[in-house]
Length: 117
Image: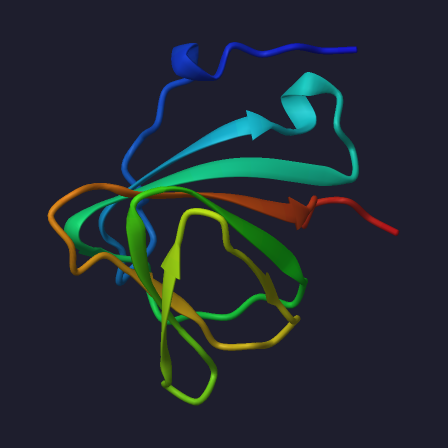
């Protein structure tokens, strides 16, 4: 068993093209012994957004704090807030935005994309 103290984990700026005012920390990942899944915590500052992008793997999202917008593969906007979760299928285009005055935070759990089957 590995227990991390989330508040002690650094959250650097996301350096992906199209990301603006987004930070992310890895709460659980390969360095903790997790070979199959990675749990990430995203922080989107007011006015920030992730890129409009896709992955070849599924992932789940759980809103932790604040509220924001999820843009789906059709460009439709969906309001998200605490108490909601979201499933993103492999290949689905998606984006998260924060049009609000407070940080929008969510957990994102993905398979380890570096794992070879």
